[in-house]
Length: 219
Image (cartoon, rainbow, N blue to C red; front, top):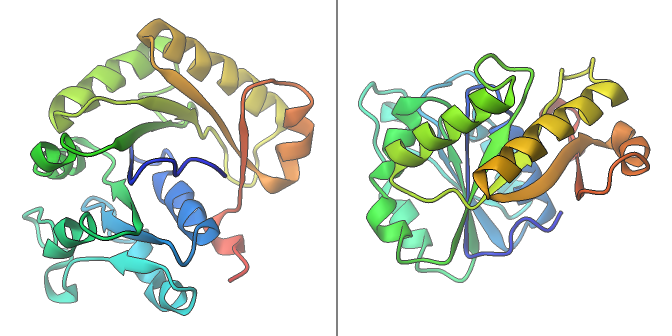
């Protein structure tokens, strides 16, 4: 999965779009040379920090708030994020899935704007608010405005978890790629669960990134 071309890769998108799953897959595949910062303040029951022991075992630096304030109402960014930007390792930012999470990202905007970064808009067309081209475009501009950062690419991560079928992927690819075309932003391709990747690759020509759902990762 060659999505970590830049020093900093930021994953942004609607709640439930699969940002954390993608972030963990990216970190796992680049283990030993990457850090993952979990700044998702909106979903305390499903966040990368729950995997801290496994991350340490595989040499993935996990940047998280102090446990005593990890679930505080006031969004905050650990100082380690700023420190990590000065290191040789690449950094992945997993951003929260609504305006509050994106606002947290905006607090880093001034620093990020000076860096060579990739801001990836992760889309799942099976989530409310991102089901159509028009909704994706509206969300794109909203996230970009709140974060104060330019979105550099869009990736299709549409899925119905274990119920995803080939036709679902093909239909969503058309929607997300069309939205990217209208926005004049790079369409990065499709995140596909491994068991469907081969079938999808025979049907579409855009890049495919096989991923594994978190509960099925073989650490």
